[in-house]
Image (cartoon, rainbow, N blue to C red):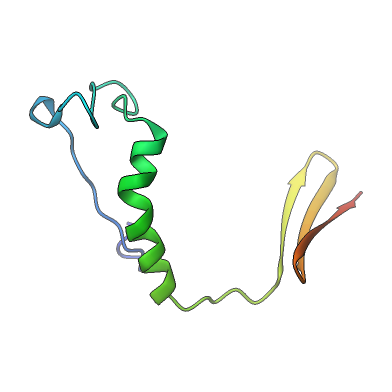
Length: 86
């Protein structure tokens, strides 16, 4: 579904043969992969793909409704500004 929607995705199935004890340690949720190792392996490729991507973001803010409030984070110059609306 994500590929149909235009996302660059892939699915990597991991079985017993891919357990190397260093990167993939087990078949539990997360495969025992340390966050640092995962970022070291995947982040450079993700950043490279993002650099080539054109941003369609129209606004410089993002809103998160929570209960009866809305938290709005705005990108203002070299900082973020938080506005909380009731």
